[in-house]
Length: 463
Image (cartoon, rainbow, N blue to C red; front, side, top):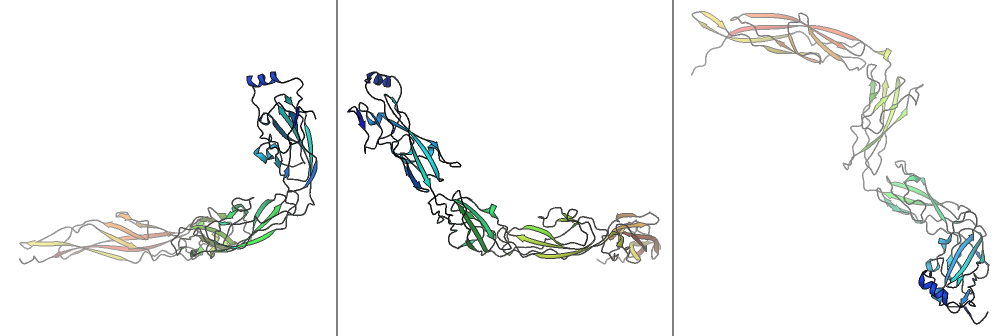
């Protein structure tokens, strides 16, 4: 090289873009036509193992000695990288930019990386120079390390640590975490892992017991064998208790769907509960596509059945930290053709006596009226062998009385006021009828209601 060429040598040159404009044009006008253009030298091609940071150097590049180092810039770029590699110009990390004289990058796959260098000074831009970096790999499988076994608390995040995982060639590894096994009370799955794909994800256990987690890592070419670690989850929280109700017979007249009851479920700590019902067993011929809960998360859900017979259900409740042990309940659903008639019982004949005060003057008796009153009639003795819910209807054959309540087991009827006579029982009899009905069958019972109006004399009080 001539004396007009300055070698960069060991001097570390700060890379920066030169500014355009009038000042630059003035500098160019001062440049001697004999001042040579810059020459890029990207260094020697070489090989390196995967996982090794590759350092580049443009130190052997040259330019006209009229220019200071801060007027010279370097432009590095990747002309070719291996297929599927994510390396780009932004991967040049040394000095933070691709316009420095000594950048570096970390290859992510084996193969050839072709890097170009151009040098710019106020006199012009050099032709590109190329360096080929060949990255080699023995392609050994990476090694997963799930970290140590640990303890956790129900409802609190537990962090896992797979940062000790490695690749024999030093390649960067990707992380895939999984849930290998959980206690029967848990619904934790791979979707419950927070920060999946990182070396330090976390999970929030939903009940106490032993959780087994798994980790596999990959280097972009191969997957590791899985590694396992455990979380021993404990809780001071007391488990809730599920109560699925007494079960029993579902009469032929009951509606379909019928209603179950988990109202007696409770939590010893007073925590609010969530509910989960399921079918344990169904009668032969039942079709899962035809039967089911209206909403299996309700405390007292409705269940629609398609075949009569024995149905068994399970209820579990959760307090937000733990799930209860399951409680089992069985219902026997009766077929419509098995319905038996109810039996009406109106409670027997009834007599109501109303008294009126009487007084005398000159041996002539005068009585007040017997006041209007009510009578209660008891049909609670009516029964149905199937356990069907019954409807009630009270009537009076002459239809002269006023009913205050005639559609319940206890009927209430109003008896009218009537004139009274001294020491005379004026009696009226009424024929009362009770009809009871299940969904299809009915029965009738009758009683006699006797209304007596009696005039009495009451001695006046002595002052």
